[in-house]
Amino acid sequence: MLMVMLGFAFFSGSMLAGGNIGTQLSFGDFAKAVILGNILLCIYTGLLSYMAGATGLSTHLLARYSFGEKGSYLVSFLVSITQVGWFGVGVAMFAIPVAKVTGLNVWLLIIVAGLLMTATAYFGMKSLTILSIIAVPAIAILGSTSAGKAIVDAGGLTELIALNSNGSSMSMNVALAAVVGTFISGGTLTPDFTRFSKNKKTAVSTTVIAFLIGNSLMLAFGAIGAMATGKADISEVMFTQGLIIPAVIILGLNIWTTNDNALYGSGLGFSNITKQPKNRMVIFNGILGTCLSMILYSNFMTWLSMLNSFIPAAGAILIADFFLVKRGKYADFKTTKFKAINPIAIIAWAAGVAGAYLIPGITPVNSVLTAVVTYVILTKVFVKKTVENNQKVEA
Image 1 (cartoon, helix red, strand yellow):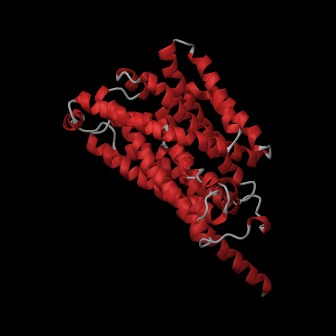
Image 2 (cartoon, rainbow, N blue to C red; image 1 turned 90 degrees about the vertical axis):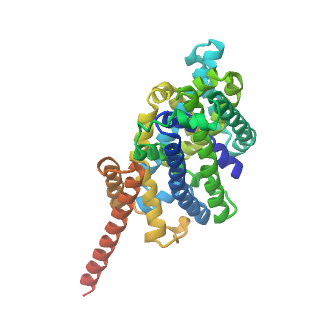
Image 3 (cartoon, rainbow, N blue to C red; image 1 turned 45 degrees about the vertical axis):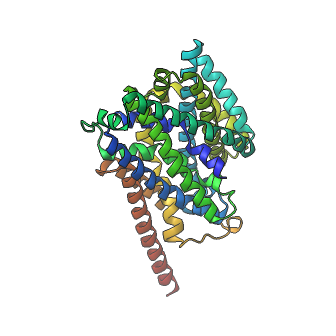
């Protein structure tokens, strides 16, 4: 399970985000943003993983307790469509550097890469584990080599830090939101994978290790190279450093593992909505993500901003319902009769999205807190009114 989660967290997209953040922050501010942002991610994903370990249920099935059977389609759609988008970003990240090296048409490479990645996702968890065992150490070696070369080329760590010592053009709130945005969508889907864990402890520990170590390292690898070269795009950094050939091979393998995870998770989500087999939805999602790849890649930071606005509130309601409303215990899934739609959850999600846009501060944190407070208060008010009405009827 740890290798699968590390394969998920060691994602080249985080290197791209690290490059964008690293070129706009001082070294010290970047370190603070990465540490604090990933701590927030670990809290969020750790709680969701605990729920999966306790119930053995995926994100989409857990959502039925809080959103209702039909209401859970909202959660499934949000996290699934964003995972399809991440798949597209990954395909473009692989195809563009390969096109630079080979001179082949980038769209031809996108189509071929998208189809091959979709094919392995079709076969599920076993193929993901095999790919992850190879990809995780390989990307760690490549990232360390690139970062080490960047430090040497800059004249040492002190000189590298001095390159960005004139201040930050990005605010800390925006930087934190960008760090959280790298995995807020994938993080919401962690129950889809950690439900296979032996116990709750394993589910939480593997998730925290994967995000705290894996995502932090990938952000740092991208930022250090970007600081030294002035280029935010990881493929351009690798090209400048003379590492483009190993980068094509290793980044390609790394992207492959995370993209397979993305299609696996999104396949479960759309299967929950359409009632079609997961593997059929994996194929559909792979084709859709491939078609959208260049659009999403070209608007990467806008993409992260959108994720921070819509996704956190959904996961927050799942967490609030399990830990605060139901006190950490759910009735047996097979025997539970779910509401069609729980309007309180929909209202709380909408409030969370509004909070992300309207409240100053860290976007995903505002979204989570607003959704949690709204959901808990409305649930208690509704339950109280229901009890009072029942008492009046009995009287």
